[in-house]
Each structure stands twice: as structure tokens, then as C-alpha cells.
Length: 308
Ligand code: MLT
Image (cartoon, rainbow, N blue to C red; front, side):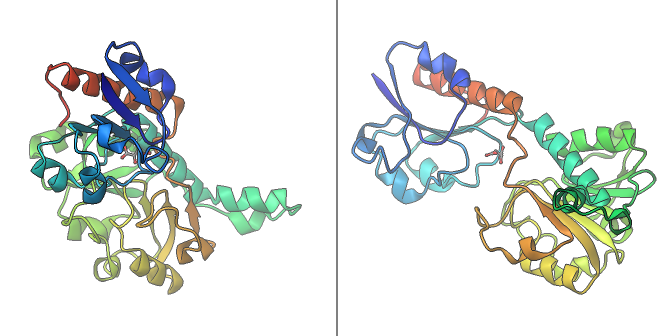
């Protein structure tokens, strides 16, 4: 019997392939709640609440596979897993559309001050002139990272009549041409964009890729979005540049530390924020749960996995 720990909130309907499989015992508990059975666990499924550290991996001597119901595997100590021969799988495309849509919702909300206007009206005020916004039409959108989500952002930006600038060292000239975007190096993109959105994974190379030095080269009044991973934009630098008025505002879904309780960015009126909701739709959660459940089942029954 394979013991599978579902440590984070993963959509139960998506776990179907595992629920129906013989020889599988699903344990839907947090790591803390399951501490007495960790030594028996063959597979662990997580979202982003559980950090799979080297210590946690060591406490599971039978562990064979770690599955991340989402794209980012930055909450998993992959080198520690690899050292033990443990396979790490994810769901690379199950939440692409949801994250792209959330980014667009954040962009529109940021430029039209929707959260601030909503709060003001609910507070009994009628302050129309305080919330004059800016159109997306005709603006230059700079996309940093042209993976699946970045590419979906391009499609939506074009429908809104935006001029799309992209930076991705892996993007070929041919693909940029086919997508109708202008491919630039990061330094150039930052000087030209009116709105900048990041869509890279968090790696040693991308941590702080947007920082005080290069933010100062952006147009005064630039807007920033991060619906990818906290830390890609240096948060202290972003705060400082908003306070001095160089950056006009930011929309942030992800933070270097989550939850970001008491975070100074949340005190700024021109910052709008959501609690890491990019992938939080019924559709995306079903997709990622089904994808990782299938991967775990394939692996445990000796079939190839596709996402590791
Ligand atoms: C991801 O990496 O796919 C998302 O951040 C998933 C999540 O919401 O946990």
C-alpha cells in the first residue's frame, strides 16, 4: 500500500486518479498533523503552504516523489530531493490562463484605482475626481519572462491595444516576430515601458532582477506588477521608489515572505494587493490537482512521468 500525504489544500475532485487507484492510501493532513506517520510516506503532494525542506525530506525515509500542484517549485529543496533520488514533479500548465487573467485584472484595477474607489464608496463617500485613471490603450507593456503565462499576457495586451515589449533571453527572433512583439534586452525594455509585469520563475538569476538601480532608469510614473513570485522585484527598492514618486503604483499578488503581514508595501495607497490568488480559480485548481495526481500515480505504478 502506497502512503500518500496531501499536505496542502488540493482540490479533492482532482485527486480522482489517486482515490480510484488500488494500493493507495491518501492521508489529507498537514505535515504537523501527520508527524507520527511521516516515516511511512511514499509521496507528498503540496501547493505553496508547505515548504519541503531538507529536514522534512529526511523525516520521510520512504519518500519517492514530491508533487507540487502548481508551476513554481521554489518551496521544494530540489537539490536535497535529488541527492536522495526523490523525483520532483509539478503541474506546469494547469494554471496558466488563470494567472494571466489575474494579472490582467490586477493591471486594469491598478490603472483605474478600482480597489481604492470600491473601498471609498463602501465607506459612504462619492469621490469621483480622486480616482481618475489611465487607459491601457496605446501604452507600452513590458513583459519580463515569456514562458506560458507571459505569452498569454501578450494575447490579452494586444486585444487592449497595447504595444508589447518583451524580455526573455530564451525567446527566438522568429517567435517574437510571430507573436508581434518587440524583443529587447532588459535594460532597454525598462526605459521604454509604461507598465512592467514580471513572469519568470524565482531563481538566483531572477531574484531582485528588478531593483533600485534599474527602476531608476524607468520612466517616471511607471507601474509595476508582480503576479509571479515574491522577490523577483526587490520589495524594499520598490517601496522606496514609490515613496519618492518615481514609480506611480504597483499591483502585487506574491511576496518574498507569505503571508506578508504588516508589510510596508501594504501601507501605500498606490499599491494594490491580493493574497497569492493568481492560480486560485476552480478551473486551475482542478487542472493542477488532476495533473499531479496522475503524475504521482504513473510514477508509483512504474510509468514515466512527464513534468520532472
Ligand atoms: C504556482 O506556482 O503555480 C502558483 O503559485 C500556485 C499556487 O497558487 O500555489
